[in-house]
Length: 160
Ligand SMILES: Nc1ncnc2c1ncn2[C@@H]1O[C@@H]2COP(=O)(O)O[C@H]2[C@H]1O
Image (tube, rainbow, N blue to C red; front, side, top):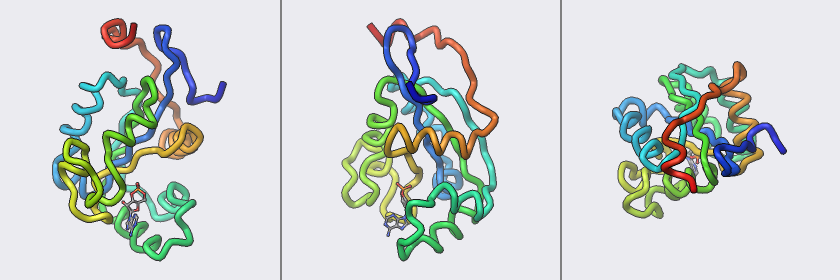
């Protein structure tokens, strides 16, 4: 079992990283989106507001290094504070991505975060890990100190 694969009550849970871009922070959407994850039944296990360096962001977006928008993405992400958070839950990576909506807000369904709040691909509010393996790497990058371990009492009302 990998570090990010866990067991919570009798349910096998995973961790996912959600990273607010500067537009999500500046537009005051952090609280709304935290509420969506809480209301869905996910458990918050780490949270921080940071002004990330270009070097740190280059590591986070390493798989996009060859893309034409890579330099502007790094410059933009380093232009203001971002918020990193880690959520734990059943299929947290897949369901988190579904809650975010498509990368391009044009293709994001209403009801998703991008479908409700974004219009441009370069201002699409927040990033979500796209696989359990990448979540593990991203969580290690943003939270090298580790996540918080605790029991959420509401778990018995969410899982069978
Ligand atoms: N032209 C583009 N195509 C895709 N992603 C872009 C583009 N320009 C900026 N981005 C950003 O790059 C990010 C990479 O993956 P994310 O899901 O985090 O969301 C993406 C967008 O925020």
